[in-house]
Structure formats: structure tokens, C-alpha cells
Length: 120
Image (cartoon, rainbow, N blue to C red):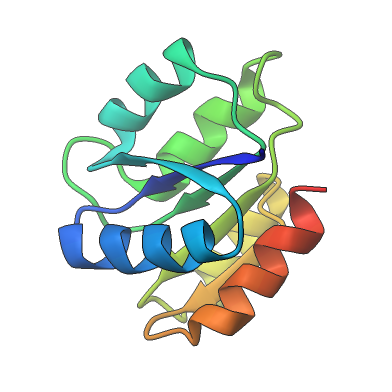
């Protein structure tokens, strides 16, 4: 079973994403911000990370940079799931290795399709 890390400071978003991915056959782990995510990544191997941009303590773009600099996580697929739509942020995320950028609110079917393709 593919394991996905969901990183978002909104518990509601984490629960909605976890439910949709669980129904699609994925196992999920939740983290409330970037520092929490780093702890989870140190404990478990993941097939993919879903990452919000705006979070306390360590934001999504900074976490993405850390993931891509770490040999253990450099190839880990990341999908950004955020309310942000600024072209500069999207370009920064892509240059840091993000494989997708989805804007909230997102249709969960679209998210499941993206995760299924990238976590293969």
C-alpha cells in the first residue's frame, strides 16, 4: 500500500484529503506544519507528499527546498495543495522539484488522480 504524507495546518483539509486517499486505497499520515512533517519523514518512508504553502513554523516552499536537498527525500514526489495562485510561487515550487500545484478548494477526484499517477 502506498503511503502519502499530508502536510497542512488545517485539520479539516488533512481529514478530507486523508478520507479521499483512503477510499482510493492509499495509507496516509498527517502533519500540521513543515517541522512536524520532517519528524514524520524521519520515521517513515513515503511514496508522495501533499504540501500546503502557508503554514506556521516551517512553510511548504521552505520544506520543499529541504526535501530536495536531502538525498533520502530528493526524489520524493511532492504535490502542492494551496490557496495561492501567484505565478512566482508556482515557478519557485516547480524549480524546487514540485510535480504539481493544485489550488484549494480542489475536487478530491482530481487530487486522487494526481496522487495515483505520481505515487506509482
